[in-house]
Amino acid sequence: MIESVGRSVRESLEGLGSAGRISLEAVRALRDVRTWGPLLTDQMRKLGVGSLPIGILIAAFMGIVLALLASYSFTNSVPRYLVGTLVQKTIMMELAPVLTGLALAGRVGASIAAEIGTMRVTEQVDALETLAYDPISYLVVPRMLAGLVMFPVVVGVAMMIGLIAGWWASMGLLDMSSVQFVKGARMFFDVFDVRYGLVKAASFGVAVTAVGCACGLQARGGSEGVGAAATKAVVTSAVLILVLDAFWAVVWLLRRVT
Amino acid sequence: MKKRSNDFLLGIVILGAIALVIAVSLFLRESDIGTKRHQITARFRDVGQVQVGNAVVIRGVKAGRVERVELAAEGWVHVLFSLNQEVALPPNPVLLLGASSLFGEWQATVTGRQSVPANKDLYAQLADASGDKDGALPGAVLPDIAQLTSVAGGIAGDVAATAKSIQLAFNDSAARELRSSIHSVKLMSDNLARTVNVQSKNLDTIAVDVRSGAVALSRASDAFLRNIARLDSATSGGEVQRIMKESALAATQVREASERLNKISQSFEKTEGSLRSVMFRADSVLIKVDKGQGTLGLMVNDPGLYRHMDSVMVDIRGLVADIKKNPRRYIKLTIF
Image (cartoon, rainbow over all chains, first blue to last red; front, side, top):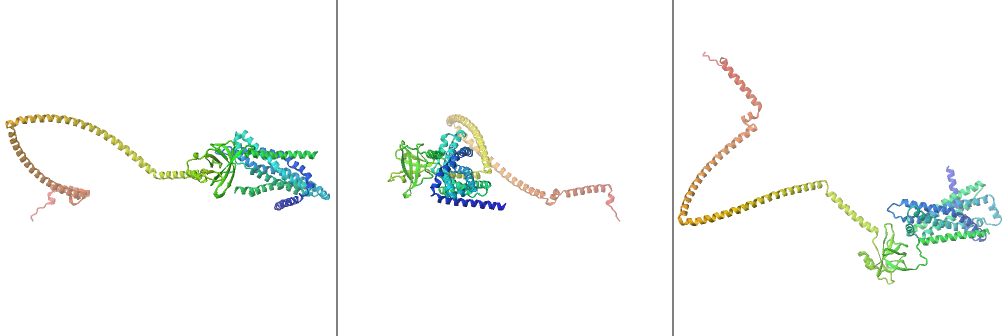
């Protein structure tokens, strides 16, 4: 058991290391626009547009639950309009980026790891190299760029849907007036809230796609290796999302608080 | 064809998402695109907890928001406010910053200088901030709720200390004493009422007596007048001289009787002294008897002695009876 724990930790660190190495190689491969350019749109559609439904669904339920939770937590001495404040702040700064990021880590990360892993075990990656295509430019860069651009898009939509869902829940289920909710949402709103959430989402997108690509490229064996690569990509991405969340809170949010 | 379709869909999604985010952000930020606003600047020494986005109100109606808060030279803080175009500032305007609720919300109130609450500190702040050469309005910060609650807390502490002191002073003993005092006052009041009642009756009686006395005096006065008239008639017949002689004789007899009475009184005094001496001696004898001193005292106070004497008397009585009965047993007359 001790050996398995040690092995899993080592593999996780190796995964992170290889993801970092692949990210650096991807930055270098950005010059090869002719290779990754034609593939970018397709990847963005698959990663972003294809993820919108799950993002919207999560955000809608998130907003409803958060409004109900806020109303339940606030006693009579707390004004009702603070439900709007709590929903706005929490969804925009934390829940929309993190929950959507985790959902996309499952969907996108596993998809990328499985796709590239399959290419690796079926030697398609080797074939690309034989045809003088850089696998990083062809496979990794478009996916990472798609993640960088489309994660904030999906998270931005999720923010708005979550806020609207919370607004609707406050009016329909909590007997709050629209004016009250909007007053609370406006009271402490700052554009920084949106900026902070979107930047976090972009970092999550890069991390999820980089980890997915790294796990896929490291896949060995047959279908079993592909499945293991997908699982590893999801777990590592989820952990990395939470680590990055804490990182941004400490680096960016803490500075504004103090 | 498929690629074009992908691009279109992607463009729609990205532009839609951007538009949605911007629209909601502008809505939440209360940005009125196309609405003209005018801006004013006020300067403060301290702005409390005012933040960008806080409301600006005029006579309780929201009329704008705080746009910028920045440090300025000479220890000032400049705050930029945006006001709705149609809003007219009151004459001689000043800006007052203060908490609008207990939850950390602050607001800026635009008001005329004559409407500023009567507070020396506010007046001092406004006087200090007046006269900016760049035209910034003077501003002041109203006391924070924390300050107010601090003062209220101090007052509550004083009240608690006073209550504690009262509690210490007014213990059970004090309550009992107070109750006793109240009872005493009640008794005194009852007594006073009774006294007043009695004295009132006495006064009534005195008044009646005075009235009857006055009547008697009147009668006496009449009698005196009649006697005077009689005296006046008597002086002419020598009756007064005779009366005077008889009066002198009577006075002599009275003096003699008095002397005799005086002698008798003196002899009574001597007799009384003898009696007192006898009584004193008898008293001392009785005290000794009572203390068991002397024979009589021993006899009186010692029941054993009494019983012993009693048995002796019985024996003597038996002996005398036996002597009477058999005299030869005790008396022998022999000649030889």
